[in-house]
Length: 104
Image 1 (cartoon, rainbow, N blue to C red):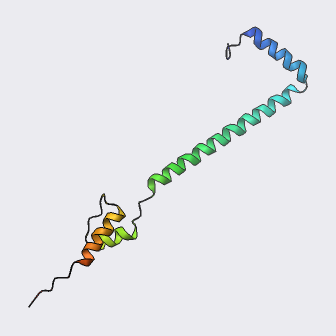
Image 2: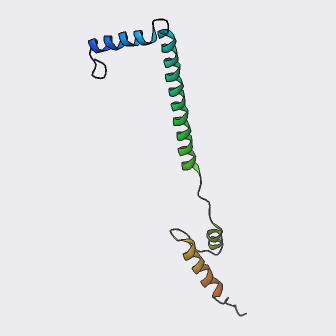
Image 3: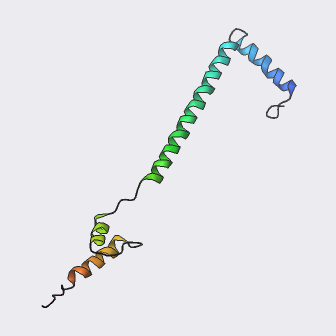
C-alpha cells in the first residue's frame, strides 16, 4: 500500500497513464522524472552544504573590538560586560582626572 492506495487503485492509475501518454512515451517520461528527482536531490545537498559552511563561518568568526574597547583596554579599564557608552563614560572620567605629580 503506497500512500493509502491499494493495488487496484495503482493498476487503474497505471492504465490511465498508459492511455494518456502511450506506451512509447512512458520510458521518456520515466527518464525525465528520474533526472528531475536527481537534480532536486543534488540542489538539496548543495544548499545543505552551503548552510553548514555558513553556520561554521559564523561560529569561527572572532569578535572584533571596537575602537572604544581598544582605547579602554589601553587605559587599563576592564571592558568585560560593558557597553561602549559605559566605556566612554569611564574613559572620560579618566581623562578629567588631573595627573598626580610626584614630588622629588
